[in-house]
Length: 214
Image (tube, one colour):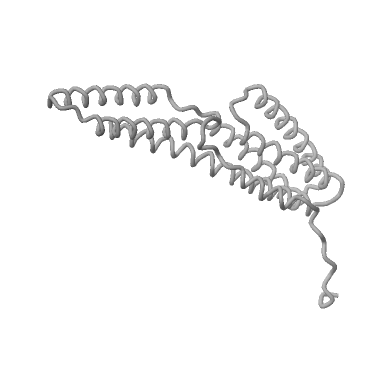
C-alpha cells in the first residue's frame, strides 16, 4: 500500500505541476506576442494586440472554470475563433511586409497557440481509472489485513486503527484531488494570466528620442 500511495501521489503531483507550469508558459507566450504586436503598430498590429488581450482573458477563464462541459465548450469555441482571427491578421501582415519584425510576431503567435494546445491537453488528462481502482483495492485489502491481525491479538486497538484509516483516507483523497484538474481544492492558480493582463492595461508608451541622439 505504501508503494502504491507513493507511486500515485508522485503521478498526481506531476500532473498538477504540468498544469501549473503550463499556465506560466502560456501567459508568458501571450505577453511576448502582445509586446511584439504593440511594437509593430499600424492598424493590424493594434488589432492583434487587442485580440491577444481578449485571448488571455479567455484562457484565464478556462483555467478557473469548474467541471462545466457547456461552459468549457463555449470557451474553446471562442478560443478557436480568436486563433483564426489573430492568424488571419498575422498572415496579412507577413504577406504585405515579409520582414524580420513581422516574422518574429508570427513566431510569437505560433508559440501562443502551441502553449494553448499543451495546456488544454494537460487539463484534459484524467487520472487513469486503473490506478484509482488499484489504490482503493489495496487500501481495502490493507485495512482488512490490519483488522485481522488486530483480531488475532484478542485486544482491539481502536485508536491505532482509526488513526491509520484516517491517514490513508486523507492521502487517497489528496491524490485524487491532485489528479483532478477541475474539481476539488487543489486547483491551478491563474496568477500568471493576471500578471500578464495587468501589463496589457495600456498601450506601450513610445518615449521621445533622447536629446543626445539628435
